[in-house]
Image (tube, rainbow, N blue to C red):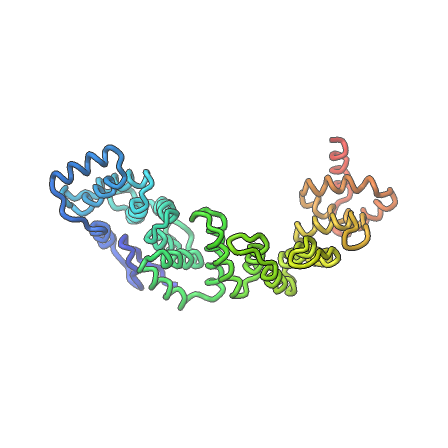
Length: 369
């Protein structure tokens, strides 16, 4: 993708370079205000000095435009910062823009992105667009086409007109897998509540978009949403539909999902034998939650016979990877295993590249606690 030249007006300038002077010109004319009288300025200054962020923003624009006061990039930057620090979303976005080009302030692209993020979190569509451009150009962040497209999409949904063209251009240039990755990143943003406020309904919507494009991670994620009724109405049938698709293709999280639903009787009667089968499939791929549940079922004989040696091997595998909880379970199980059987297990552990000597030392420490 061709890198964007970004103006503070958020104009999408395609295949063209923009000089610093042009960028500064864009800043000075942004959000033009009616001509201020000396009385207007005196009132604004009084309100701004008392800490009114709206007045601080207006005064910053007045200095940027030379409206009622001598034009001063430095004074504009100072008041934009004051308003931004008080949480004014428009000021935060503009401060990011002038930091990007060094207009009346020392240039700092990383700080620009920080302010864009603060503004975007408050729903500012312009800041979302600026974030898209930052990730597109690698301004203050590493170039990331999927994140760039994600922020352009969010900006478009928030009503930024310039983002419409950016989205169209991206969709004509990006590979389908990158677009799908963008959907997943938006879902994660809403899921975690970091760069934007947490919104489980939006997270579910974007997981579903990615899932319908065949992404396995997204298919499992939307299934979990349906299981928990998180952001969508609880629907075990839909959950099973999404899980089964990826589970049949060998996806470990999908197999775990199927096992969990079978174990807990979600959408049908509990089927421990079926659950155990799915946990075994997922465990073969090293899926840790599945391995733990399988070990528990092997120990208790749920869905089949009691098989403590098999449970020991699972816990040994987990313990060798540093899982202290698995080590404690193994220490308990070892008490029910006779010495001859344990020696057999040690040989099997060696074949699994687990050092029995080190494991036994760790178990001794657990036993002495």
